[in-house]
Image (cartoon, rainbow, N blue to C red; front, side, top):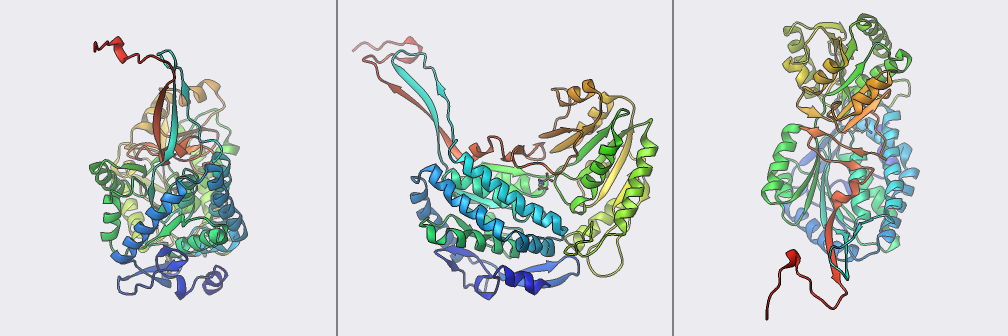
Length: 510
Ligand code: UN1
């Protein structure tokens, strides 16, 4: 099975390292290895050679050379490069989706869905390549014109996480590419194969079209190269997706050198279900949001606030649905599976620790709460009731399918609890009360980067800006005007008059 997937994507010893540009893969064999492990069995799928300092230096040098060409290439022509990548991804969607399922552990439709998000952002970026608009402002001085324009930024570093091993790269890389930047990718050490496969697909699609090298890749066996990457002044933007702990360090280091960082960190996403909610909509949204990707999305629903009048009924319905999911936990590449494994044995450990903390704090395990016996990192989807929002375990993002259900009396109380966590990524309310919905979306409502009505917390479309506030890091990727972070803004004023009116009306006598 795994051999077939690797074969379909052309992965073999000839491309098991860094991508150095010019069609060349590194030959380094003495910088350690990064293992790709199947989370459903904990068997090694393949080993990838980590990159040396020399590989990294080659990448930076070639990326700088490529930028010289790319920054003067017209943006619509840059869009053509991304269009070719999107076409190639369409052709390889099935195989790459399977590799995502195999290596990351999400189920096959989610793996395919992730590749679809890459295709969607490619389409979006192609259109955006003709719309890198700046404003024209009216100057306060006669005979002057003032406007702003957007120039390419330079090299963009992308550090992605295991849970969306390919889509997050595409959200960044395809926008950065139409903006005139050159991307260097350091993928999660847990998903090196999907990164190599993506690199291969995209670079082969670009090979004969006469473009410079647009995408580079390196792997790090430890953290030394990654740290050098974050500190590298030749890289004006580092886009980092991952934990708040690591993201904070990345943000501080990049700020130290006055670079720009785009941070997509943890979420602790809540859903509010009020007493008018249409439960036909709310229940599948809860289950999808909390159990989807085995609770390993940044946007996973982790807290559920239910109006006290319907709390017990909602919990009973959710538990019933979870029991059905329990029977369909297994190999993520099998079409019948609804929930795959966690990505690593450490994740199972964190899941079990959180369950112990929840119990110690007085929580009741309504369903789940244990790991499955046998090979692989399987756990049961879990519902915990009876905790307070202020309990430490509820305040913490545990990357696993644990849902904390709590009661509320008034909407303001529910909104206050929802917002009373360090993170601020995604949020949702289920209500049929227009006043409640509008209040939730108003300035006194949800404090998150994403706030939805009658739609769950996960499954954000690429067309909107994706990201969140507070400890989620403040970055925005993907749709809306997120492209601006990959460019530098310049304000230009042109005087076409015969006078030189000085600012503040100052006059120099000569
Ligand atoms: C993430 O978990 O890092 O909204 C991103 C969603 C996906 C993106 C999740 N479109 O669930």
